[in-house]
Image (cartoon, rainbow over all chains, first blue to last red; front, side, top):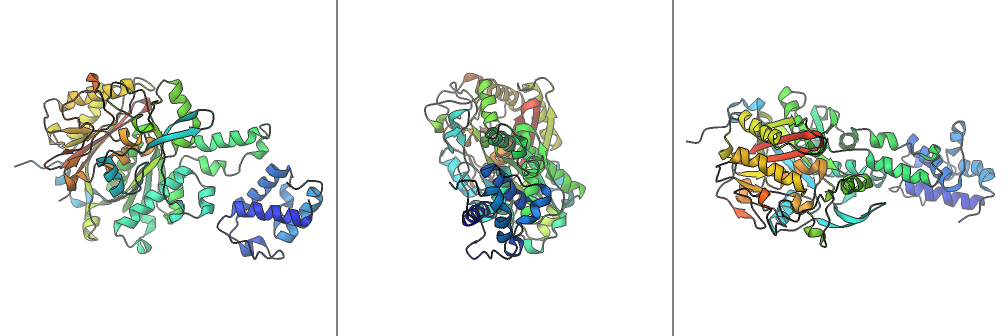
Length: 86
Length: 420
């Protein structure tokens, strides 16, 4: 997956987890929590969806990398670069 | 002069009234549409398919889920939570309360459930099957969804209610049990407003269908609307349904003080236990429960105008309930008997509360709705006053007695009175 494809995948997961949110103008540089109503259970949903969809394992102490879209894509790129986008 | 019942002689602070009802049922999402469906003979049972069991029937609720919940909260919570939130919020909307200024620490939530947690547990096991049952794929939402207080807790979360909340597990007697708990808590002064009733999400668990099928107690018929047929000679089991019915209960003194519209007064109740079998009912204990409710209320059997039966469409259960009722109401020529499951199937934890609700408008219109789908009455289910297939005009309805029984031999009876 390219960084752009990873971003699209995260957007898809977010739209599922937070279906009331408008993600059109999501600012990649700002934290998700500044822009959306997300709590710790929602972040665990992101982790679970990545695990279910792509078998990507994210250790507890690395959850902080999922703070914003840009940090998430940067963190996931080496883990997902060999995955072929559906 | 007709003697007063015992409850009418209590001080207003010890009398409890229903001041609003919210509901969702397979054939109506408010009391008016539900009542109209019952009077018009409109079934809410349809074809239904569920994993592993396959094609069967169910009563399915269709209401505007996002009226009171965000899409995110619907996703995060349970179906029991969603039907309960809809019913509770509708009850408050219809109550005339200035909800924004109600002290919500004085509101109690008491919700009857037949079972809870099966749906989510089945879903998770189904989900992790795709991952070779690796439990690292098990949802972190499982525990908050499956704790036994979930349906009541979701109502509290949604409505900002900070008083006590819990569920009452009472098999299929749970709807009545939830209301009874609300009455007791109001009388004890534990709350000033009680949201009380029952909910069911059971159509979303294949296990309940499969278990009834293995027991030989799951209804089958060529026509889904004819599948639920209590008292008919060809009845062959239960139609599983979902639903919710929640009442706003208040002490009469409080209801009067705010000028509330009063739907009915709860005049008596009883709960007892067969202690004889896991599933088979005991008509002697059922009769004792009905008699106990009458005695506690200072009522004789002939004072009751409508008996809402529990009958589920099983071979032995229906005739045994009638056996119990015959022993209590023998010689009472003015009592009418009906059944709601013939329209909507068995709404499990919601059944007692919903079946009572559909009868409450009889206080105004004087009509006893029927039990439908009785093409050939089983003689073991015959009882004078059984209202078959067509509603019956009654001159005046003052008392309604509501039966609700469940597995492990739990029996519950609630008696409500016209308030005037």
